Image (cartoon, rainbow, N blue to C red):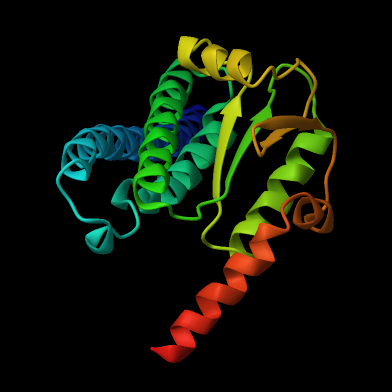
Length: 226
């Protein structure tokens, strides 16, 4: 009877050990996947920073008719989506996530400068919106404005929207807020180089940017002629 009892405990121990090792193995697997995701985002940011620097050099020698959309701009959305995923899964205070956000913010600013250069050189119509939010306090309106801006981009793909965490310790973000006199009041949008605050709907933004409809009509007419 005693031997039978010991055997039962032994099997219980073995099964428990197998379950524990299985959970540990799954945890290591998902940790490895998260690390791969972080490295992927880091590589994407590094590559696109190099791309932006190369594009700056090309702008000085490239005719306006040969200039298309910035490849840097095209990559920003996909990198931003992956970064948002990491922020949701690892937390906003994760050191690696914070470092990636800093690099991504610099990438956005580089693209903003690049596209402003294109606009000035080629007299192009490229509307810009700078969006400042905060992770310090629970800002529900910030999440709602983020959704509105995503809808805006779907409706008007030519609009450049750059989002920044106001409290992220990046001196260049502080410079942006100083230039446009953005207060510590969220959400904040910079439209036509002037800050506006609070929750805004798509209709509100369209009213503040009447040029959107004109550019959209012009783009549609050009596509039809082609």
